Image (cartoon, rainbow, N blue to C red; front, side, top):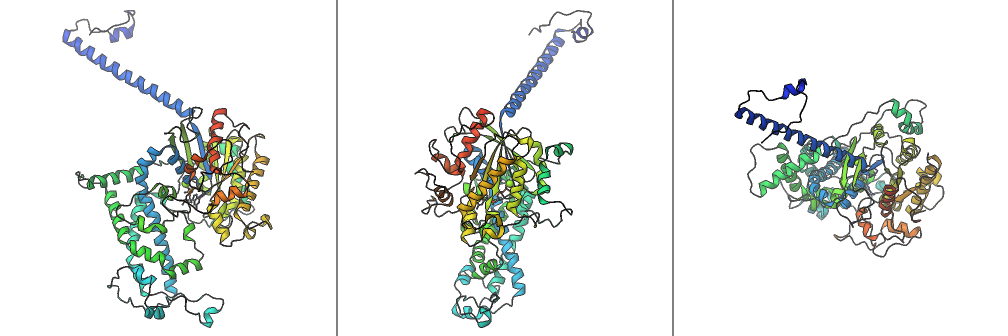
Amino acid sequence: MQSTRIPTDPDDPLTAAIAPPPDESPAQREVRLREEAEAKRINDEIEERLKLDRAAWKRHKSSFKLLLLGQSESGKSTTLKNFQLAFAPNAWQAERASWRAVIQLNLVRSINHILDILAQEMSKAPTTTSPISSPYIRPTTAQARLDNPTPASSTASGLDRSSTPSPTERSSSPPPLHFTNAHALLKLRLVPLRRVEADLKQLIGAATDELAPDSSALPEGVAEDANAAVLFDGTLSRRRPAEFYVRSNNSWRETLLSAYQGLHKDSTGEVRAAATFDGQSKLEDATEIIASCADDMQALWNDPVVRDVLNRRKIRMEQTPGFFLDDIPRIAVRNYEPTDDDVVRARLRTLGVQEHRLVMERSGISPLATNDVSREWMIYDVGGSRTSRAAWFPYFDDANAILFLAPISCFDELLQEDRRVNRLEDSFLLWKAIVQSKLLANCIIVLFLNKYDLLEKKLRSGVKVKKYLPSFGDRENSAPVLAQYLHQKFKDQHRELSPQARRPFYGYVTTAIVSDRPSPHRVVSDPPPLRAYAEHQGHRVHARCRYVLPLRRFYPCISADRLLLVPLLLPPALRHAVRDGILRHNLKKADFV
Ligand SMILES: Nc1nc2c(ncn2[C@@H]2O[C@H](COP(=O)(O)OP(=O)(O)OP(=O)(O)O)[C@@H](O)[C@H]2O)c(=O)[nH]1
Ligand SMILES: [Mg+2]
């Protein structure tokens, strides 16, 4: 092969330096040419990589950036999971298995929480005689005994809860709780779940720990309003660089996925490397212990005395994040595989700001996957606790849209991290800070008034809104009325505070999980909460839209000329935003109010 050289000045020092030696032998020449060819190949490769990087960067720049904001437990990550499920189902399937440990941990944590409460109550209450006096006698199922006590045991242990209360019991203080040896036995048998919880936590990482209440007080004279708003003062954020970090949201998934893959290979007979990953054996052990505790977990959860304890303490397990106690027989098995809904409902706290790249996989599934929309979205899911909020700023600069989640069921709850602050009030202050932020002036802002299903349940159980929200006044104590009231409040603040007078408001009432799951096909006979809300508002609902399901289920109901259930409206809104830069008032009058 002949090397082609550009004729250059022989006096030029560089030309002289790279010129072949005058007495070069044919063999030396061959080596030199080979080395030059290799150097060229490497150079071309680098050039090519740079080109790809440039293209990737350009693509990154042109991708649509969506920020999910809102207080902790408002449903940001749940909404993100709905997006992934709807638009990137293949990627979703690939990582579904990694959620198994999270769901198992959610379940085990709930059981351990109940056991803690039980232990406290039992230490206070006198233990009565029970037929199960020996821990060595293992009944067929503990549940059978707890649910169907023999008449003798009922009388002796007080498990017969329909018996007439004594005059003292009829007084204002509730009757004493009657624990039996069966409860002590359950506590004993479920002890291994403590280790399971510790192992799973260690495997998954710090996000498994929920927030501890913060007892530190605000400085004297600092109003809550100021405290929240100051975080979103653009000038302040620029002067004092926010501490932020992007934690890889993939690390725990990768760890668990590779561990599961190892387990899977075992079952198909492939050789497993010796002394493999510690995680595999921990996962195996956890699944084994959980499966062997299934009956006892079920017995604990079904036990009327335990339920009584929870009721008296006003603990509503059904409303706690990561509630899987109604699914014990399905989850506490050796071959448990999470369903889509399990993954959507699984609770894992977000730490820092997590970047998710979402590439729309299927066209035709939604109006998003059309030509005028970026196929690639960068979604930023943030940790919502107060201490995490300073980390949001650096993402405000080039965000295209904000999806703000405000849970409306929490009007009677306090912030986990600051027990003096009402959660609804915190959401409201945060919303005000977001809508008035100059950094976000050109962003489309969409509001999800989330957890409507929980709001409905709460109001149905008799909680009075007025007690916690005096401004609600004497309005009807119902979910649709409160949802509409709050919708208007948030809308008013947006109008008053927005730095962009013409920025449109998009506010929707949402339920991000399947809350009622009566059958595998989820046919709901009564109008589900959101549908009822839509009807209450006098909107027509598409005939095919028979039930309220996560966002993805709404898409088949899209119809341009009709008013549809709420979450449907987000994608068209964002689609227009992408196409037009800033959203114009060109959407059909499809807003809820
Ligand atoms: N019933 C009900 N539960 C919901 C709804 N949306 C979210 N959840 C549950 O609420 C819990 C918290 O949801 P997440 O999505 O993890 O909350 P988050 O806003 O990401 O919270 P952080 O990561 O702490 O900021 C989870 O257990 C969800 O399953 C809803 O609409 N209804
Ligand atoms: Mg989250």
